[in-house]
Length: 201
Image (cartoon, rainbow, N blue to C red; front, side, top):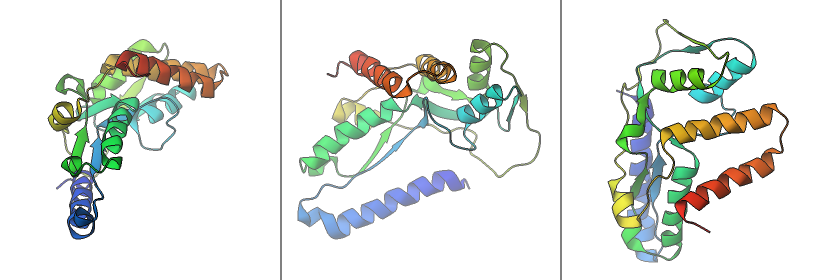
């Protein structure tokens, strides 16, 4: 019933079919990976919650929210990227045991509603406001979560930043950008901070 979720399932089916048909006997390990709803500084995409919020804030108007009750598995973009790199390393080594589908999502406590995210941002940024959109829209699943237990158990992967910390990192990035900071250097600083907390050199 939900086209977005169905598209993810379709991608995994196609990947599995190609793996079994063409790659299994060749020694090439092929996997698919999906993440939670990623957030991070420098995301300017249209129709995404935090970019839309920040654009509205920058223009001095309230952001219009269509589904404040919808729950999504939010995480900083560096979280699934760290998982993708772990998985890619094993795939490059030809480990057939890791060929297959993988989820890299946050713990259940970080699956929060759209309304919770927006209120957190409004409370953290003076002058930011939001309002509800009461028009009818295409159906979306009310609650989406990812089971990442396979990645935790078999790859030793885990998230490092709580949702609150991830949101604070986005706010800090945007404030640096608004003040004309060197965003290349600031991105490197955020990556270094994440790696330091993850114990990666």
